[in-house]
Amino acid sequence: MKRKKQPRFTMQVFFIGIVVFEMACTIGISYGLVWMLHRWTDFSYDIPDIVWLLVFSLLLGCALSSAMGKRFFEPIARLRESMRQVAEGDFSVQLDDSKCFKEIRQINADFNRMVKELEATEILQTDFVSNVSHEFKTPINAIEGYATLLQGGEQPLTKEQTECVEEILDNTRRLSSLIGNMLLLSKVDNQSIQMQRTKYQLDEQIREAILSLERRWTEKKTEFDADMDAVEYTGNEKLMFHVWSNLIENAIKFGPYAGLIRIRLKKELDRIVFQIEDEGPGIEENAKKHIFDRFYQSDSSHKEEGNGLGLALVKQIVHLENGEIYVENRPEGGSCFTVVLRA
Image 1: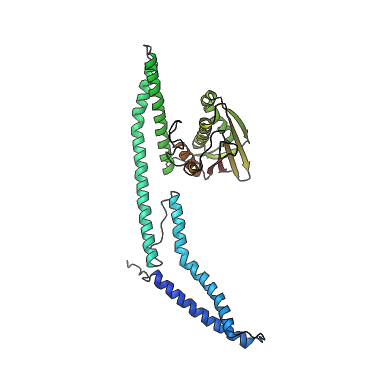
Image 2: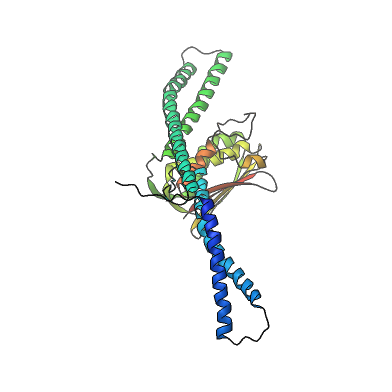
Protein backbone atom coordinates (compact mmCIF):
# COMPACT_ATOMS: atom_id res chain seq x y z
CA MET A 1 0.00 0.00 0.00
CA LYS A 2 1.47 3.34 -1.09
CA ARG A 3 1.81 5.80 1.75
CA LYS A 4 0.03 9.08 1.29
CA LYS A 5 2.47 11.90 0.62
CA GLN A 6 2.59 14.35 3.51
CA PRO A 7 2.94 18.11 3.10
CA ARG A 8 6.50 19.23 3.72
CA PHE A 9 6.06 22.94 4.38
CA THR A 10 6.86 24.29 7.80
CA MET A 11 4.83 26.57 10.02
CA GLN A 12 7.16 29.47 9.20
CA VAL A 13 6.57 29.10 5.44
CA PHE A 14 2.84 28.71 6.02
CA PHE A 15 2.71 31.79 8.24
CA ILE A 16 4.58 33.93 5.66
CA GLY A 17 2.25 32.65 2.93
CA ILE A 18 -0.80 33.47 5.03
CA VAL A 19 0.43 37.04 5.66
CA VAL A 20 1.14 37.63 1.95
CA PHE A 21 -2.20 36.10 0.94
CA GLU A 22 -4.05 38.13 3.54
CA MET A 23 -2.40 41.40 2.43
CA ALA A 24 -3.16 40.69 -1.22
CA CYS A 25 -6.78 39.83 -0.49
CA THR A 26 -7.40 42.83 1.75
CA ILE A 27 -5.83 45.32 -0.68
CA GLY A 28 -7.58 43.83 -3.70
CA ILE A 29 -11.00 43.58 -2.09
CA SER A 30 -10.63 47.02 -0.51
CA TYR A 31 -9.86 48.60 -3.89
CA GLY A 32 -12.89 46.83 -5.31
CA LEU A 33 -15.13 48.11 -2.51
CA VAL A 34 -13.88 51.69 -2.94
CA TRP A 35 -14.54 51.49 -6.67
CA MET A 36 -18.05 50.12 -6.06
CA LEU A 37 -18.66 52.86 -3.51
CA HIS A 38 -17.99 55.54 -6.14
CA ARG A 39 -19.54 53.66 -9.04
CA TRP A 40 -22.89 52.62 -7.55
CA THR A 41 -23.55 55.16 -4.83
CA ASP A 42 -23.92 58.90 -4.77
CA PHE A 43 -21.54 59.53 -1.87
CA SER A 44 -21.27 63.24 -1.10
CA TYR A 45 -18.79 63.20 1.80
CA ASP A 46 -15.35 64.49 0.90
CA ILE A 47 -13.31 61.63 2.31
CA PRO A 48 -10.08 60.61 0.54
CA ASP A 49 -10.04 57.18 -1.09
CA ILE A 50 -7.01 56.25 0.96
CA VAL A 51 -9.10 56.51 4.15
CA TRP A 52 -11.74 54.17 2.75
CA LEU A 53 -9.00 51.84 1.63
CA LEU A 54 -7.54 51.75 5.15
CA VAL A 55 -10.98 51.20 6.75
CA PHE A 56 -11.90 48.33 4.43
CA SER A 57 -8.40 46.83 4.75
CA LEU A 58 -8.63 46.91 8.54
CA LEU A 59 -12.07 45.27 8.63
CA LEU A 60 -11.17 42.61 6.07
CA GLY A 61 -7.81 42.01 7.75
CA CYS A 62 -9.50 41.37 11.10
CA ALA A 63 -12.01 38.96 9.52
CA LEU A 64 -9.38 37.03 7.59
CA SER A 65 -6.99 36.93 10.56
CA SER A 66 -9.74 35.52 12.78
CA ALA A 67 -10.61 32.80 10.24
CA MET A 68 -7.00 31.90 9.48
CA GLY A 69 -5.96 32.10 13.15
CA LYS A 70 -8.62 29.60 14.16
CA ARG A 71 -7.34 27.18 11.54
CA PHE A 72 -3.73 27.89 12.48
CA PHE A 73 -4.14 27.33 16.25
CA GLU A 74 -6.60 24.40 16.07
CA PRO A 75 -3.84 21.73 16.40
CA ILE A 76 -2.48 23.53 19.47
CA ALA A 77 -5.95 23.56 21.06
CA ARG A 78 -6.29 19.82 20.39
CA LEU A 79 -2.88 19.21 21.94
CA ARG A 80 -3.84 21.20 25.04
CA GLU A 81 -7.08 19.22 25.48
CA SER A 82 -5.22 15.93 25.01
CA MET A 83 -2.64 16.92 27.63
CA ARG A 84 -5.47 17.68 30.05
CA GLN A 85 -6.95 14.21 29.47
CA VAL A 86 -3.58 12.55 30.06
CA ALA A 87 -3.12 14.57 33.26
CA GLU A 88 -6.47 13.12 34.45
CA GLY A 89 -5.21 9.57 33.81
CA ASP A 90 -6.63 8.85 30.35
CA PHE A 91 -3.81 7.19 28.37
CA SER A 92 -5.98 6.22 25.39
CA VAL A 93 -5.56 9.67 23.80
CA GLN A 94 -3.88 9.73 20.39
CA LEU A 95 -3.26 12.69 18.07
CA ASP A 96 -3.18 12.66 14.27
CA ASP A 97 0.48 12.74 13.22
CA SER A 98 -0.11 12.47 9.46
CA LYS A 99 -1.45 15.95 8.70
CA CYS A 100 -0.81 19.62 9.43
CA PHE A 101 2.66 21.12 9.45
CA LYS A 102 5.98 19.42 9.88
CA GLU A 103 6.47 20.79 13.41
CA ILE A 104 2.94 19.81 14.49
CA ARG A 105 3.38 16.29 13.07
CA GLN A 106 6.60 15.88 15.04
CA ILE A 107 5.01 17.18 18.26
CA ASN A 108 1.97 14.90 17.83
CA ALA A 109 4.19 11.88 17.11
CA ASP A 110 6.29 12.60 20.22
CA PHE A 111 3.11 13.09 22.27
CA ASN A 112 1.69 9.74 21.10
CA ARG A 113 4.96 8.01 21.95
CA MET A 114 4.99 9.63 25.39
CA VAL A 115 1.41 8.52 26.09
CA LYS A 116 2.21 4.93 25.08
CA GLU A 117 5.22 4.89 27.42
CA LEU A 118 3.12 6.31 30.27
CA GLU A 119 0.43 3.70 29.63
CA ALA A 120 3.01 0.90 29.66
CA THR A 121 4.48 2.24 32.91
CA GLU A 122 1.02 2.49 34.48
CA ILE A 123 0.20 -1.10 33.49
CA LEU A 124 3.55 -2.33 34.85
CA GLN A 125 3.01 -0.48 38.12
CA THR A 126 -0.55 -1.75 38.49
CA ASP A 127 0.47 -5.35 37.78
CA PHE A 128 3.36 -5.06 40.24
CA VAL A 129 1.11 -3.69 42.99
CA SER A 130 -1.50 -6.37 42.36
CA ASN A 131 1.00 -9.26 42.33
CA VAL A 132 2.95 -8.06 45.37
CA SER A 133 -0.27 -7.46 47.31
CA HIS A 134 -1.42 -11.01 46.59
CA GLU A 135 1.96 -12.39 47.71
CA PHE A 136 1.82 -10.42 50.97
CA LYS A 137 -1.76 -11.33 51.81
CA THR A 138 -1.20 -15.03 52.59
CA PRO A 139 1.71 -14.69 55.08
CA ILE A 140 0.03 -11.75 56.82
CA ASN A 141 -3.15 -13.75 57.30
CA ALA A 142 -1.04 -16.59 58.69
CA ILE A 143 0.71 -14.27 61.18
CA GLU A 144 -2.62 -12.84 62.29
CA GLY A 145 -4.05 -16.35 62.71
CA TYR A 146 -1.14 -17.58 64.82
CA ALA A 147 -1.23 -14.45 66.99
CA THR A 148 -4.93 -15.00 67.59
CA LEU A 149 -4.22 -18.60 68.61
CA LEU A 150 -1.66 -17.36 71.13
CA GLN A 151 -4.31 -15.12 72.69
CA GLY A 152 -6.72 -17.99 73.16
CA GLY A 153 -4.19 -20.62 74.14
CA GLU A 154 -4.54 -22.96 77.12
CA GLN A 155 -1.63 -21.38 78.99
CA PRO A 156 -2.30 -17.80 80.10
CA LEU A 157 0.10 -15.18 78.77
CA THR A 158 2.02 -12.75 80.91
CA LYS A 159 1.18 -9.06 80.71
CA GLU A 160 4.24 -8.42 78.54
CA GLN A 161 3.38 -11.30 76.21
CA THR A 162 -0.23 -10.11 75.91
CA GLU A 163 0.94 -6.64 74.93
CA CYS A 164 3.28 -8.11 72.32
CA VAL A 165 0.52 -10.26 70.81
CA GLU A 166 -1.87 -7.31 70.71
CA GLU A 167 0.82 -5.24 69.00
CA ILE A 168 1.35 -8.00 66.42
CA LEU A 169 -2.39 -8.23 65.75
CA ASP A 170 -2.77 -4.47 65.50
CA ASN A 171 0.04 -4.12 62.96
CA THR A 172 -1.00 -7.13 60.89
CA ARG A 173 -4.54 -5.75 60.68
CA ARG A 174 -3.21 -2.38 59.55
CA LEU A 175 -1.02 -4.05 56.94
CA SER A 176 -3.93 -6.26 55.86
CA SER A 177 -6.09 -3.14 55.47
CA LEU A 178 -3.38 -1.50 53.36
CA ILE A 179 -3.10 -4.53 51.09
CA GLY A 180 -6.88 -4.77 50.77
CA ASN A 181 -7.07 -1.13 49.72
CA MET A 182 -4.21 -1.58 47.24
CA LEU A 183 -5.92 -4.57 45.64
CA LEU A 184 -9.28 -2.83 45.47
CA LEU A 185 -7.71 0.32 44.02
CA SER A 186 -5.90 -1.77 41.42
CA LYS A 187 -9.17 -3.45 40.42
CA VAL A 188 -11.01 -0.14 40.25
CA ASP A 189 -8.22 1.39 38.14
CA ASN A 190 -8.36 -1.50 35.68
CA GLN A 191 -12.16 -1.62 35.95
CA SER A 192 -11.81 -5.37 36.43
CA ILE A 193 -14.59 -5.22 39.02
CA GLN A 194 -17.91 -6.20 37.54
CA MET A 195 -20.12 -3.16 37.81
CA GLN A 196 -23.19 -4.89 39.17
CA ARG A 197 -25.55 -1.97 39.43
CA THR A 198 -28.51 -2.55 41.71
CA LYS A 199 -31.24 -0.28 43.02
CA TYR A 200 -31.17 0.26 46.79
CA GLN A 201 -31.85 2.84 49.52
CA LEU A 202 -28.83 5.10 49.79
CA ASP A 203 -29.86 6.60 53.15
CA GLU A 204 -30.15 3.12 54.69
CA GLN A 205 -26.70 2.21 53.38
CA ILE A 206 -25.18 5.29 55.04
CA ARG A 207 -26.87 4.38 58.35
CA GLU A 208 -25.39 0.88 58.06
CA ALA A 209 -21.95 2.41 57.50
CA ILE A 210 -22.37 4.47 60.68
CA LEU A 211 -23.40 1.38 62.67
CA SER A 212 -20.46 -0.62 61.32
CA LEU A 213 -18.13 1.93 62.95
CA GLU A 214 -19.95 1.91 66.28
CA ARG A 215 -16.89 0.81 68.26
CA ARG A 216 -14.84 3.75 66.97
CA TRP A 217 -17.38 6.51 67.61
CA THR A 218 -18.36 4.98 70.96
CA GLU A 219 -14.74 5.03 72.18
CA LYS A 220 -14.40 8.66 71.12
CA LYS A 221 -17.90 9.64 72.36
CA THR A 222 -18.68 11.14 68.96
CA GLU A 223 -22.25 12.26 68.28
CA PHE A 224 -24.06 12.37 64.94
CA ASP A 225 -26.50 14.90 63.51
CA ALA A 226 -27.92 13.11 60.47
CA ASP A 227 -30.58 14.63 58.22
CA MET A 228 -31.10 12.36 55.23
CA ASP A 229 -33.86 12.18 52.65
CA ALA A 230 -35.14 8.79 51.56
CA VAL A 231 -33.09 8.40 48.38
CA GLU A 232 -33.20 5.46 45.98
CA TYR A 233 -29.99 4.99 44.03
CA THR A 234 -28.77 2.63 41.30
CA GLY A 235 -25.08 1.77 41.52
CA ASN A 236 -22.47 -0.66 42.82
CA GLU A 237 -23.69 -1.21 46.37
CA LYS A 238 -20.49 -2.80 47.67
CA LEU A 239 -18.18 -0.08 46.37
CA MET A 240 -20.43 2.75 47.52
CA PHE A 241 -20.50 1.30 51.04
CA HIS A 242 -16.72 1.67 51.04
CA VAL A 243 -17.10 5.38 50.16
CA TRP A 244 -19.43 6.16 53.07
CA SER A 245 -17.54 4.09 55.65
CA ASN A 246 -14.23 5.71 54.70
CA LEU A 247 -15.56 9.28 54.87
CA ILE A 248 -17.31 8.62 58.19
CA GLU A 249 -14.25 6.90 59.64
CA ASN A 250 -12.07 9.88 58.67
CA ALA A 251 -14.53 12.30 60.29
CA ILE A 252 -14.37 10.27 63.51
CA LYS A 253 -10.58 9.96 63.36
CA PHE A 254 -9.83 13.66 62.82
CA GLY A 255 -12.70 15.04 64.89
CA PRO A 256 -12.22 16.03 68.54
CA TYR A 257 -13.15 13.90 71.53
CA ALA A 258 -16.93 14.13 72.17
CA GLY A 259 -17.27 16.03 68.88
CA LEU A 260 -20.19 16.27 66.49
CA ILE A 261 -20.42 14.95 62.93
CA ARG A 262 -23.11 16.38 60.65
CA ILE A 263 -24.37 14.27 57.76
CA ARG A 264 -26.73 15.54 55.07
CA LEU A 265 -28.23 13.63 52.13
CA LYS A 266 -30.47 15.52 49.72
CA LYS A 267 -31.95 14.84 46.31
CA GLU A 268 -31.85 17.94 44.11
CA LEU A 269 -33.54 17.52 40.71
CA ASP A 270 -31.26 15.15 38.74
CA ARG A 271 -28.50 14.84 41.34
CA ILE A 272 -27.90 13.45 44.83
CA VAL A 273 -25.77 15.49 47.25
CA PHE A 274 -24.09 13.93 50.30
CA GLN A 275 -22.20 16.11 52.81
CA ILE A 276 -20.29 15.17 55.93
CA GLU A 277 -18.85 17.81 58.28
CA ASP A 278 -16.52 17.34 61.22
CA GLU A 279 -15.17 19.66 63.93
CA GLY A 280 -11.53 18.74 63.46
CA PRO A 281 -8.57 20.98 62.61
CA GLY A 282 -9.50 21.19 58.92
CA ILE A 283 -7.15 20.74 55.98
CA GLU A 284 -4.30 23.08 55.15
CA GLU A 285 -4.58 24.86 51.79
CA ASN A 286 -1.41 23.28 50.39
CA ALA A 287 -2.71 19.84 51.41
CA LYS A 288 -6.18 20.20 49.86
CA LYS A 289 -4.90 19.74 46.31
CA HIS A 290 -3.15 16.48 47.30
CA ILE A 291 -5.75 15.06 49.69
CA PHE A 292 -7.02 12.57 47.07
CA ASP A 293 -3.52 11.51 45.92
CA ARG A 294 -2.37 7.98 46.63
CA PHE A 295 -0.31 7.45 49.79
CA TYR A 296 -0.61 11.13 50.67
CA GLN A 297 -1.13 11.92 54.33
CA SER A 298 -1.55 15.50 55.52
CA ASP A 299 -0.19 14.37 58.91
CA SER A 300 3.47 13.92 57.97
CA SER A 301 4.28 12.64 61.46
CA HIS A 302 1.92 9.65 60.84
CA LYS A 303 0.52 9.92 64.34
CA GLU A 304 -2.93 9.10 63.00
CA GLU A 305 -3.56 5.57 61.85
CA GLY A 306 -3.90 5.31 58.08
CA ASN A 307 -2.10 4.51 54.85
CA GLY A 308 -3.09 7.36 52.55
CA LEU A 309 -5.11 5.17 50.18
CA GLY A 310 -8.62 5.64 51.55
CA LEU A 311 -9.50 8.96 49.92
CA ALA A 312 -7.74 8.01 46.68
CA LEU A 313 -9.93 4.92 46.52
CA VAL A 314 -13.03 6.94 47.40
CA LYS A 315 -12.34 9.35 44.54
CA GLN A 316 -11.82 6.51 42.04
CA ILE A 317 -15.08 4.84 43.06
CA VAL A 318 -17.05 8.11 42.87
CA HIS A 319 -15.62 8.80 39.40
CA LEU A 320 -16.48 5.25 38.37
CA GLU A 321 -20.07 6.11 39.34
CA ASN A 322 -19.82 9.30 37.20
CA GLY A 323 -19.92 11.44 40.31
CA GLU A 324 -17.77 14.16 41.88
CA ILE A 325 -16.15 14.66 45.27
CA TYR A 326 -14.49 17.72 46.75
CA VAL A 327 -13.52 19.09 50.16
CA GLU A 328 -13.81 22.50 51.80
CA ASN A 329 -12.84 23.93 55.16
CA ARG A 330 -15.69 25.19 57.32
CA PRO A 331 -15.45 28.81 58.53
CA GLU A 332 -16.13 27.71 62.10
CA GLY A 333 -13.50 24.95 61.92
CA GLY A 334 -13.35 21.44 60.57
CA SER A 335 -13.78 20.15 57.03
CA CYS A 336 -16.73 19.30 54.80
CA PHE A 337 -16.60 16.54 52.18
CA THR A 338 -19.23 16.68 49.43
CA VAL A 339 -20.16 13.82 47.11
CA VAL A 340 -22.39 14.55 44.12
CA LEU A 341 -23.99 11.62 42.29
CA ARG A 342 -26.37 11.41 39.37
CA ALA A 343 -29.89 10.56 40.43
